[in-house]
Length: 389
Image (tube, rainbow, N blue to C red; front, side):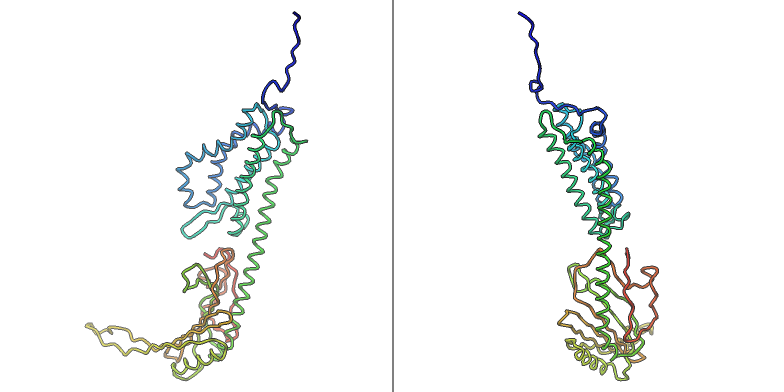
């Protein structure tokens, strides 16, 4: 019998993936770099997280012996599927998916906020681009989702690839462009988040400044009735709500002055109750602490206790706005010292903007109002303070 020519078709070879056209294209380059990147990525991620790391970095350190092989194998999984099917190069969609994953993991690590003794620690991106706390969280979550989406795309294209996959047209060119486009898009995205955060901070600072001005204006008439000049202020701005168990804050303004009235402190207190009611405050019944008599001498001839002066206080509320007012009258040698403390309705704190009126011993560069007196219709402005703690 004559020898018959036998033609072997691709269908008879079995499930195998052919190499990409040309052995030196970008997909082949990614194919050979893939193992090194996959195994280095857990270590690089841990190092980048350390830029904004806190106590969690110490907790994760002994776990690296498990984290590195687990995430290394996870990053290699799509390539293993392709290699088992006979591939010697990465399909373009797989390459793009893995590049999205790798860059997103890097960005997520850089946007990671650590946990310190007094709260969150700014991430590397937060320090470099001035991202707010919410901006850092947004970038971190977005990068994490894109990292998962990128490796999911690579998995899907690797697992469900046909025997001879039809790569996307001009795939190598698109993959090469993606090497530049993906990091540039991340850079532009982070800049946009930073700009958005700056606008939010400015808006919040403006709103808080307007609230401070409104609170001060609400006290002008009351202050005028107490004293024309000599008002001193030792705080305030946005402060922690003293009466709230939950995390909240109030806008606070506190003033101290010697009353222009020559009346006794008890009379001044009664007058102030009437003035506060006339100015729209719902006043409560005053509480008076009578002065204690001079204490007798102790065994060594020194007083056994310090006599307490006369003090009267009452609280009031602006029912329409939920504001509170505390008035304290102290008897001093010069007459009656009056302290006003007005507080707005409590609200949740905004960690992204700190607007305060601080004394220079807390924040450098602010005007020194210590020892400065104000008229009844004057007050210092709030100052937007960055990283005031």
